[in-house]
Image (cartoon, rainbow, N blue to C red; front, side, top):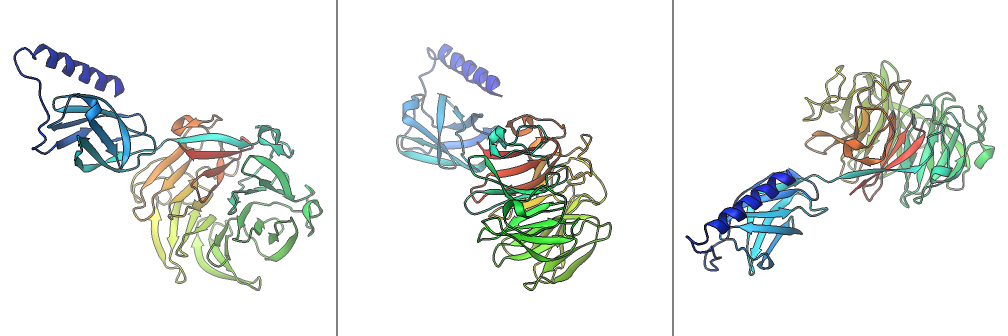
Length: 426
């Protein structure tokens, strides 16, 4: 597109120059309105060149200012009824406004800005093992479909099944062990005095307490910020969700005819939703509604707060694939983890196969827009591998856990790569 638009602008410049002997150069008429008829392309990210069609422009670019959603764009050139701009970073969706000598007009339609999402490796070196340290000096061995969560200060907590530990990752990528000895046993204690069988998922409450599921031990455990563990209750929990408003815990049991349970303050449980196909994870939006990943039928299912009445189904039950679009047309492929951001948008970790198969079509994080339920691919694609980069150029190998910070940074458990990846908008 860039080369085409440059060619168009150059051709128009030559044409205008060759005809200047016959016609007077066009001038901006301050008494007449500036007109924007259309622009093309209508969608793009930072650096996209957009050709604006209209009238009453001026060739002197020093007199022209253009904004996209209020963010100033670079004006590359003007030729009579065409104006060429470059879309600025972090513009967002909004009108294109042209200002000449203080006189302004805006487009009828919004420019649809598509931000770039850059994937980097926060911690882990790709070799399965156990080592605390910073960045690539740390080693993980997930060995299963593990989850993670984040606290208010930006610290990550990761369930690590094969190493039987709960790891903490500071914002700078420094990994420490919060709790777990690595021994395959059940024991309460502080730090390495505690032991787990199969820690699978974690959630964090507003006070920084971490809760972890251990389905092999049939427990949910609480871990205080200093690493001290205690028993919440005996239950076969896999995926965990937490209502940040009041700290209420929910869990899924990942059975063929599975259920979602609510954990009461006394540690007892209430079975609130039944008959689900391998429910693997659950997240809670700002209103208390639950969104459950049905790994067995490859859909995301909403359940309304307190009544637990079924809501929207996102995806096509029993039909696996990698298809974006509206809720009923989209396809997932045995998804596993889910998270909600502050605006109730949903993020889904794609590959929930038992062995993290490279043949799974969803080696990616999918994004579901709150309210419209439009599904898109947030980062990654259908190819398993390892590569940092932007959008589909980034590669994952069996992403299973996902969480998002209050600042919108997305973190992923990249299971087969034994790394924790970070996705930042531009």
